[in-house]
Amino acid sequence: MKKQKLLIIVLFQNLAGENRFDFAKSPAPPLSGALLAGLTPPIVDIELLHEMVRPIDYNTDADIVALSFMDYCFEHAKEVSRKFRELGKTVIAGGRYATNFPDKVIPYFNSTVIGEAEGIWEKVVYDAVSGRLEKSYKAPVLKSLAGIPAPRYDLIESDFAMPVVTEATRGCPFTCSYCQLNITPMPYRKRPVADVINDLKSASSLPFHKRKFAMLLDNNLGGDRKYAKELLKEIAKLKLWGLGVQFSFDCLQDDEFVDLLAEANCRMAFIGMESISEQSLASVHKKQNKVEEYKELFMKLKKRGILVFAGLMLALDEDTKEYYDSLIDKLEDVDPAAILTSLSIPIPGTAFHKTVSEEGRIVDDELSHYEGDHLVIIPKKVTPKEVFDAYRNVNESFYSVKNTLRRVYRLVKAQLGYDNVIRRTINIMVSSLILIKLSVFQKDHAVKKVYPLYKEYFGKEPKEVKADRFEFSHSFTIF
Ligand code: SF4
Image (cartoon, rainbow, N blue to C red; front, side, top):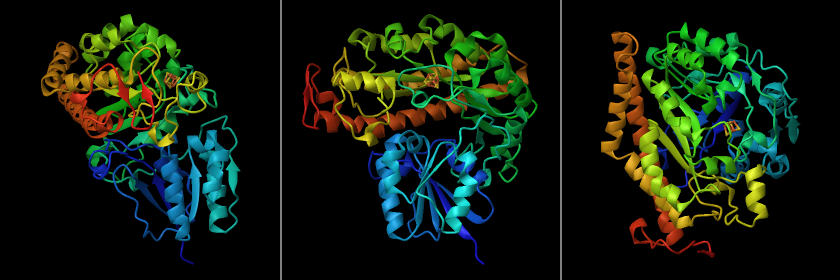
């Protein structure tokens, strides 16, 4: 009998309009789709589709469709589900939003997986194939992350330059008030080092050059430093050409951790810097970040050819006009290689959402706008216009060609004298290339996705808007 087909779709809704796929591409895919494919029993054929790089084809011959989506894609997921269900497909939802808010999700899908897929996905697939699918499945909390199969890298679209993605840990020991991880807190858990290494070696179907780069998409790789060091020592033996990781700022105080990153050929570290104001950091309980240490600790990475990709959040409650006016100079001083600028998001269920909601400062509850580009709250100490001006000024300045080249220069200069000549030369080439690519991508995102909101919010192009007052087009006025 012919096998049924499962189509796994990782949704990505880009709200900027028509040419959405030409700038939605990131070098690495999210992990969820390939991970779910790896967990799927071989009783079905599988296709994996990342909406970041290609549109959904509703003419698919798939029988079952599994949708993975973030909070802000929920409305989109409902629409995609409706279309597939009208075509007679069985649609299953899963992911963090479905886990946190199952009652909101369940009505719109044939079935919903609540919790981590590992404990339940095999049963869901068997039930779907045999026509016994239940309306929802609650997965048990996994005490151990041992034995999770490797992601199916072979199913990832060739558009992704770095398809080898995996995770070593889940959770985070910190309690930042805006963080989604703290809606349903879970203990910090680690996978066996051997399992992670096995993942990184499981990409044999990919072209050689793609196998030599990998991303660990942990929320915080450094939540257990001892474990992270053990893992990095093993990764170093793989002799990758480049590794990308994400960890909290406090890890940079640990010299051995930073040295081991370099030995594992880490070329990019994403760090949630979020603000260069102690007051703004305190307002979201980001106690692990120390503004006065940014410059020195970022330099540790730069010297080793590891570029700092730093999150920067605007519209935090303690942000002031004076802070925004000083932001470009502060960034120049602490010198991250690239920044991911976003506007604060009051994700439902978080402490930050509770605060702004109780204070009546939520002005837009359309979940699809909770992606970091829209301003959905009334800021406390700045006007919305000042937030958008800061966003634009920072991006225009930071990602100008001149300043991007200056950052490349500083990154190269910092590495002089570190490591042997051959390794240093390779490091410089790889890290400079990543810096330029990241900068182009981030600037592109700002110009195509966020700047058009000026027109939507203020009814005018950025330069025409006066600073003292503005009106949202969503029928309310803020001074
Ligand atoms: S450090 Fe990052 S992952 Fe951890 S709680 Fe804060 S925002 Fe979340």
